[in-house]
Length: 589
Image (cartoon, rainbow, N blue to C red; front, side, top):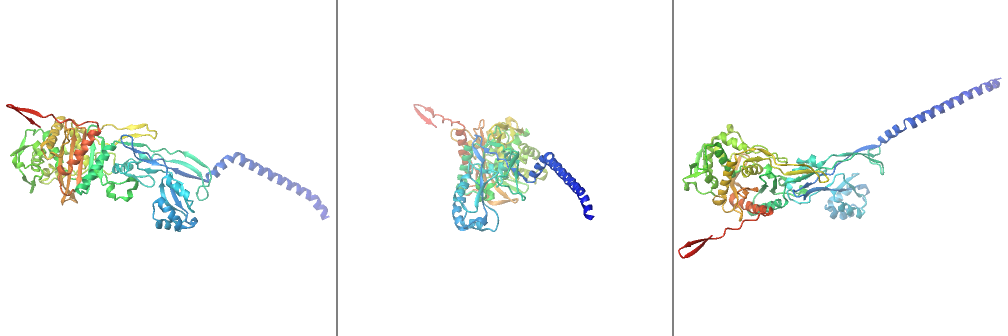
């Protein structure tokens, strides 16, 4: 009976089971179809995204060129050499083979090959030729990989190194133009997606998709003339060696455009191996070293007197060799003509013979307000806004902070500090008729294809003095060279020159250092309508301290080189004059 009952129920259960299985199958099929068809693309993208790793691609850094288009520094493709120590079979033998290629000691390399690490760098950013030589060795555990950023190749060696500066391993600018214009040179980074494993490591032969392409950096075209820069550096090195000086600076400026054609500093360094040089050699002394200018500043005392309207070229002052002011006794420098021999002296004579006492008398007669206004008018105490970082504005205290002798000492270039760049800019204003220009070391910015994005032009800050005053001051500077402290060392055969010598004590931590001096000369050539303004500053020379003996000869050589480089030939000397005396004739030269 039970068997008959089971026989009746079994088919019913089977039918329900069949229906349930069919329903489940249909449901799974429907779900599978929905997932595959409807959600398939979305799920595929989601799954792929889970294996994607976003990687930043750095842009190729822009080049830095001289004014003629010559390469000072640019980026080249590079590779890096690495080691997986666990795969190295013979650390000593491999280190011996690797050492001459990567220029590292065998012992140091062997330590790297034996290190208890999974991965280590042996050399970063080497040229392809170096990487290829390593490849050919076939060393176990040692390989190379392309770098995203290039190898910064310094094509010009040390030329203008303190202006160009240098970059770090990741091509981030650290000094000079490399630092101040880093954003322009660096460009814009891109992004790409790479297929990675669970730990974010790239999957070999995995997919790589560029999301955003990197935009290469711009090219900076400087105003530096490579020939004048080379000559300035060569002459400075010779001068530093001759006088056993601590350092030296030279600047060549176009007074009509404000362009800096040469900015030389000694010591300097090799940007490709900057770490091998002391940090002191990296410094651009032309913009960072403020100093008391000494007698080169007397010209601005003369400018203040003439612009005040109270004095003219005919005005005369008592000529003496000592003066007590505010409890301080002022003396004339030893390299000038004795003032007492003159009885009285004009402003031109004070400048020509570099009399400290006379300059102090002129400054005190002009007054603190007019003196301070003229100093500020020439831009002293302010940044010149040069396209370089680290500029020192100098120290120019207002009259309210002056002591009883400050006006007198400022009048001959003490109690005030300025940079070489600030001084050469002020002399350029005298050369061009009185306009204070913004100095420039960058002439243009170019795209990667060489097309010009932006070209800089002359930028006038303000009028510092009247054209007539500037012409008079140029006459004073001409007198310095003809019969003053610049005669004959600042004379260039075949050309007319004008300029001013300077000798000043070194100030350190607010005190004058005994026996430490700065010798300088600032001049222009030709004197009538200057094409170049040139500054030479030599720090702590030995054997002589005077600007006329130490700095002026460097100016002379550099000025002559500049004129010949510009294609301006020297004038022929005048023919001898015949003077008749009765029946005989004499030749005068």
